[in-house]
Amino acid sequence: MPRVKRGFKARRRRNRILKHAEGYFGSRSRLFRQAVEVVHHAWQYAYKHRKERKRDFRSLWITRIGAAARQNGATYSRLVHGLSKAQVALDRKILAEIAVRDPAAFRAVVDLSKR
Image (cartoon, rainbow, N blue to C red; front, side):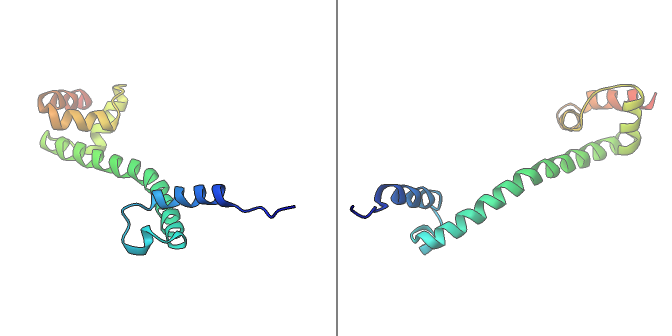
């Protein structure tokens, strides 16, 4: 019985990793072992940062809402509390967008939360 050589499957596996390592510096994009290491790290970072991106955006929205609220004589916490009391269902993403694009509408939202 002839021995089994792993030609096609192994090459396909290696090429898939090397394809992901395209654009990396030096041997990281050319040598399989180093490419495996950096590609696996890259995948870990990508996974972790997909989670972190959500936190980063929420924090950015809160900062923008807080700054716009202060310009209209309120604080972030009072604004959000007032909106929840008034049963206004605007999330932070939309509030931040309104604050940046339409200051007059945001002023109306602040007035609504003060009542």
